[in-house]
Amino acid sequence: MTLFNVLDILGIISFAISGSLVAMRKKLDPFGVFIIAFATSVGGGTLRDVLIGAQPVFWMKNTDIIFIIMGSYFFAVFFRRKLKYLNKSLFLFDTIGLGLYTIMGTEIGLNAGFHPVVVISIATMSASFGGVIRDILCNEVPVIFRKEIYATACVFGAMIYLLLHNLGFNETIVYVATSSVVITIRIIAVVFHLSLPTFYTKR
Image (cartoon, rainbow, N blue to C red):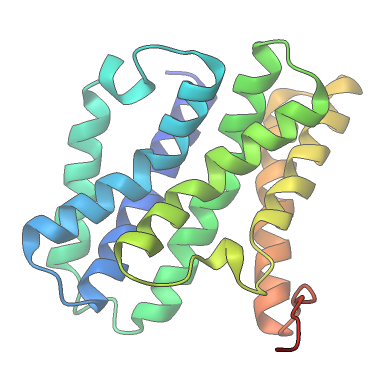
């Protein structure tokens, strides 16, 4: 198992737990919680594979992913009382997943030979659209569409990945730097209440 595979699995676990926490906060039934966990885990990657023409999509080619999601779902359900501060736990797992999936999306786009701008776009969608699907299904305005710095962190992470990759750095350094940038930006933005400006029009 390569480092890429390990990070991929960790990203799936993080997003599955994130989706489970949101669904339980919405008081969905067990099946509903699993569906949200599943959609959060594979939503962004599925969109990515559809856009780049990778058929069938990644989780259909590797059924182990489904069992990983199931295990993460049961973990979140059984230990929900241990995760006392659901909002903080949700932020933690969602942020970790965001950082790891940025790596996945960037590397897959790079290996496909796309232009750097396209690679960054694919990485951002791969990392953030699982959360978009999760929030829509749970009847919330997706984080990516609010003032919070979310997708922007993925953009900077993907840029760091491309920069270090082109400079010839070891993949471990590239992976660690990319995820660290995404996670750090998210944490700083939340702690210091940083956000992007909003646009509005008067009626």
